[in-house]
Length: 209
Image (cartoon, helix red, strand yellow):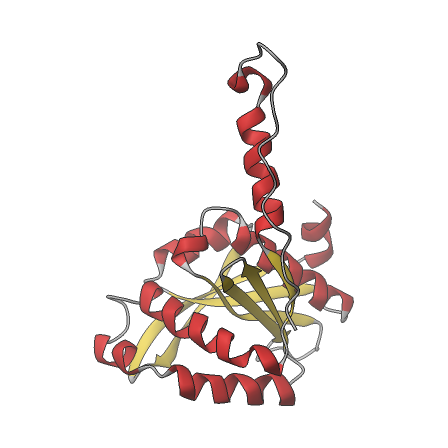
C-alpha cells in the first residue's frame, strides 16, 4: 500500500530585516514543499483502482494528437483496474506509485528488458505523472527510484521506449542522460506508431553521478 505523505510544512521565517531573495528563503521553502508533498512507495493490488485512474488520465493528457482520439475517449478505468490488479499479482515487474494529499499522481514500472538476452538490462516499461503534478522533479524521482530497484536486482543497464512524436517525454529522458540507441514501431490504440529507444549503458555510474 502506498505510504501517506506528511502534511505541508509552514513557510520558514527569514531573519528579521533580511530579504527573502538574498537568503534563498523562497527556494528553501519550495524545496521543502517538494520533498514533503509526495511520497513514493511500492504499489500493491489495493492500489489498482488509483493506478487505473492515473493511467487513463495521463494517457489522455499525454497522447492527445498522437494516438487516435476515439481510442483515448474509450479508455476504461474499470478495465484498466482489472488489468492492474492482475499485473501486480502475477509479474515480477516493480511498480512504484507517487501519492500526494489528493491521492496518486504518478507511477513507474520496470522489469527485465523485453529484448535482453543476458538478463542484466532493465527496462522502464511505463512512467507517467499527471500534468497537475509535473514541474516538481517527480518524474525524475520516480525514474531514479525504479532504476535503483532494478540495479538492486542485478541490472547493469537500463532502456526505455518512447513514442517518436512524444517530444516532451523524449526531452525528459535526454535530460536524464539517455542515449538514443534504436528505432522501432509499436502497435498502440489500433495504430502503428514509431518509437525511439533510449539507453543508459552504465546504470551504476548514472546512479552515483
